[in-house]
Amino acid sequence: EDQPEVNVTLDWMGNCVEELKTVDFSKAHPEQYIAIRSNIEILTSLQSNPLYRSAVSVWEVNAWFAKFFPTLFQPTPRVMALAAPILNAMHNREVICVQARVLGKQWPQLPKAKSTPALDNEDGDDNDDGSISGLSSLWDFVARGNASHQLFVTSDCEEVVHSAEHLFPQQVLSMDGPVVHFDKSHLGLYEQGEFARGLDRVVAEFVSFQGCQSFVFSRSGFGELGAATMPMHPDRKRFLWTGEEVYRFHPDLFAFYKNVCHDNVHNLAKTLQVSQRCTGLR
Image (cartoon, rainbow, N blue to C red; front, side, top):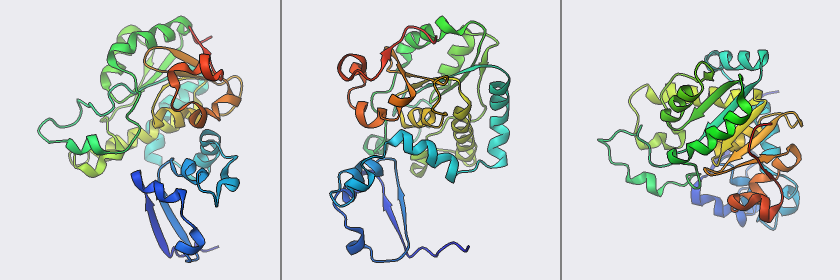
């Protein structure tokens, strides 16, 4: 069947998602086919809209995304070539995945000569990430259950990968390519070709998360949604690193994590009782 011709494209990003809390689609957009470009916040915004609340109230971000991503997106051969060594390793033995966001807006990779004040005004998930100084709590946790397992490490800072390679010699898997933030591509921060190569790496890393047996992720959309792509089986272990401590999420609870725990991440076990503080991977 031929794809329908889109009559209008709506761009709801950043503060524009506020419109979703009150919009009446049938009145505001009578066109037959509407395309929407938005971020993951579109779901929670629609859940605040009285007109559509009942229709989407049962949707949870992580449970929804786990079905959405593999259904609508097929990696290109170029991306799969990057991901293949990681996925092959996961097929042959258990690989512990580690995603550590430690810099947020303070990126040493950003060109020093270019002014980046716009970064401070960009919407995104730059809050509550970890820090370089807090890496010891992450590596201590991994080491307790690591033994001889390989580690797949990804981060917004190459220093994290180098740190893992130093602590776990001959055990670390990583991907080549520049570290980029695709939400900032429009700011002109990257050299010609650099962003494209970095984006290949980002997508390949994200695709690889689906094969993780154990995944330690940090407070970022990249890590949280990456963990959501893993099969919801009891043998697939998800751990949240807050920058200070690590919490275990069981599959039936992880589906509710983004909505229930988003603003209270440091008190999960004590106040929300939806996770278990952990000292090791096992």
